[in-house]
Every structure is written in structure tokens, then in C-alpha cells.
Length: 582
Image (tube, rainbow, N blue to C red):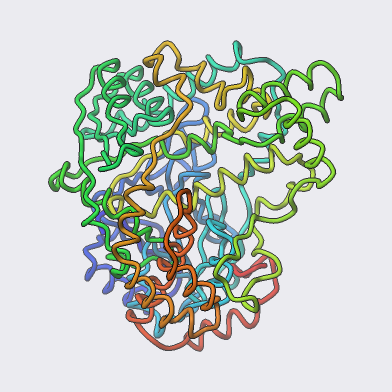
């Protein structure tokens, strides 16, 4: 747990118990103000701000001036501050270090991992209502977790504690930046995006001596490579190669490496490394260990050979660069400019970008306009029992302001939310220093302000990003349309382990809870896969959920403590205090 944290706000007797658990996990005490017991791994950066805030993680100045406190900075940090009203804990927007919390022994117990909670709380229980939501609303990450009584302090949120009651407030919202829509075109926007990205990666890279970039050969990771090179950052790259042609991106990765003048390692993925029914090595507070990615995890370890590298990647590019693929940008343009020549030009770009005729794009736009924006998070009900399907998803702080937006910007923000659910999941990132430069706050804020139709200008997706780095990347990379896939690798693993997946799902905890449509699952598992049938990915997501539930049950069976039950009973339904506000 070299990058973990454990903290307690409360009385000294309980703090002694926390200190004992911290010692068992190798966490050391950090000096801090009275009333806070703070323990971290030795690889987690820390500093004290001029205003007295204890900051864990990376913090960079928003203005270029010295940060006086957490509000002046961006990065990946947790800040603990005390004033006359009590304690507040701030988590950085977007890339903030994970933090989970609960009320415990008259105080507030916080940790970045599940294991300390398992040691200190009498009994851990699975929140089955959360599990039913997770099965239907994929990647919908809210304050609520899969463990009863434990909540997450989401990115851009503050947890306040006056010694009696806790409450959370939102410090950062994407809608503030969506509202700052820029009226200029690609020629003006691209240089600003280029500058922000280079500045961001320079901040991330200047204190990291051993950086490994996961370079897929796709546009997004290639842009990160170009920004690292332009920022003068020393780094190397690794490319993962699948046995099938669909995931063999070596041609593109080699071109980027040669263009940027960096060394490139190539790691072959072995289907035998993927065990779809093995328990996760680390149990999180939510399902989602992504067993299908374990081949990449093992290949990565073979390359780094135990080195404590900082892992950079292009994660989030599709999300922040508004890789939409729908007719929504045209509807936004029509709402802004009316149904005239300018909106018609956007419709033409949408059609070209999607490989459709202008007539087909117009027909789809008409249907989408009549249908109106989608009100809730997209649901996936395949293989879920009819009685287990929730009527509405859990709420999220960013839901406030959604109704005022068109579908394109709703989808843009939703895409950012989806990727934030992924950034702490793959096993190869566990306890490593992981950086997602494309999710840097100054970069995301700029991207949110770019009009939706500008991203598809000229009929190319992510058009502003392509233009921003066109001179820094090989043409065959910056203008490519396709993407590498791992479907062939996943298909082999599924077919080889189909009987194990069947046993896992039909005789598991989710089935016992009545959450699954067992008839539909059994019928699908019994049939041959047709070309283009990737519905088995949905089964693998459910299998991940089952494996997580079994792992939690193995940690410590039982129910929530009396203290937890009393607290959540008192504050259930109070959106300002309970982390389970719905």
C-alpha cells in the first residue's frame, strides 16, 4: 500500500486503533493538526500549503502563482483543512486520489482502499441495491459504493465535519465550463488545446524519473506521446500486441515512437493469462476488476520487471474529445443558429463522419429531435432479472444542470463520467503511480467549452485534437479513423472458459439474490457465437460482479455495525448529509 492513505477525524481512543491498523499495512503517520490522524504509504507525495492544508498527492497551480490552498490548485490530491467551523476534506476534480469514508466511533474514518475498513469495522456487508444498479447502469459511479455504510468522496467534492455531523458539497461542476462555449473555429481552438496539454504533461512529468507510456498506436495515446516530447519529458513506451490482427497496432506505435524519438517495447498478449473466473487479487468497494484485461496486466509486469514506474496513457481521449458518433451535434447547431446554412454544414460533417448519406443523417436527426434528450443514464438490462431492474439510477451531483443542455453536451459530460469510473480499476495500476494527462483539469475544462459541432468539423471525429497535434505526429496516425480492438483475444478466452462462466453465474450469489435472468443466460451460453456477436462481454461484466461479491463475502461476513446502522437510519433521505442520497 505504498500509495494508500488512512485517516480518522475524532477522539484519541479510536485514533489509537486506526494507528495500529495503519502500522500493519505499512502506513506511516504524517504530522498534522490536532483532531486528525493521518497515515500514508511512503510513495504518496505530501505537502503543507500556506493556509495550513495537508495535501496528499500532486497539486499544481491553476494560475502560475504559488498555491495558497487546495482551491488554487489542480492535480490528483486530497486536502485536509481545519478552520473555526471544523474539518473539511477536498478531493481534486477529475483525477483526484480515491477517498472512501464512513461515520465510525463518533468520528469520520477515511481510506483509499477497502482493507483498512475490513480491519476496523465489525462487519462488512454487500449493498445489494447498489449491485442491482451496477448491473443495469454500467460505469455509473456515484457516492454510493457496494459496501453498506461506506461512501466515496467523488472528484470535485468536499466532505465537511463539524465534530457532530458530516455533509458533502460540490466544488467543481462540468456545466460551468459547458456554459463558456467558444465561438471560434478549429484554427483558433487547436493551438490553445495544444498549449494546455503540453503544459499539463510537463507538470505531471517533471517530478517523475521513470515514466512508461502505454502507447496503443491510437490517436489519444499518440497525442500524449507528442505532448510529453514537446514538454521535454523523458519517457519510454510499451505497446501491447494481440495474437489477432484486430489488436496488432505495432505499425502505428512504431511510427509514433520514431517520430518522437523514444524507445518502444512490444508486449505480446497471451490468451492463457486471462482467467475469467479467478477472484480479483485486490477487492475494491465496487465491482469491476475487468478480468478480460488481465492479459494486459501480466504482459505489463513482464515488461517493467518489478520497476516502480509511473504509468501514463491516453485514457479519456474519446471522452474529452467528444467522440460522439450521433447526430446530436447537428441538433445543437440547429438550436444555436437555426435550420440554416451553418446547421446544414454541420449535418454534412456528421454524415461524413459516420459514413452515412446526407438523407440518412437528416432522417436520424428528425427522429432524435422528436424523441428529445435522454433523461437518465443509459441502461443495459440483458441477462438481468425483470424484478431486479431499478426504475431510476442513483443520483450524482452533476445531474444538477443537465436538463438545461442539449443531448450532445449531455453525452459529452456523461462520457467524462464514464471514464472516471475506470481510472482506478486495472490490476496493473494497483498501488502504482498512474497519470491520465488527458483528464487534467485545465484540459477537460477547455474541451467542455468547445462547441459539439466543432469536434466533428470536416467530417472527422476529435477534429480539434487532430488539428492541435497534426504537426507533431505522423500523418498516418493523426488522420487515422480506425481503432485497435481486443475482441479476438476476449473471444478466445470466453470460448475456452465458457463452462466456468456458466457455473459461476448460474450458481452464484447474484443468482441467489434473484438479480439474474438465469434462463436467458443459460440459453446464450449454450449457443455458438455468430460473427459480430459480442453480447458475451455483457456476461463477462456480470461475472466480474459475481467474483467481486464472493470476494467481499470472503473478507468478513455479517452486517453493518450498530453505530453505522444508527447513523444511516437517522440521515437516510437527507441529501445534504447522507452519502446515500438518491
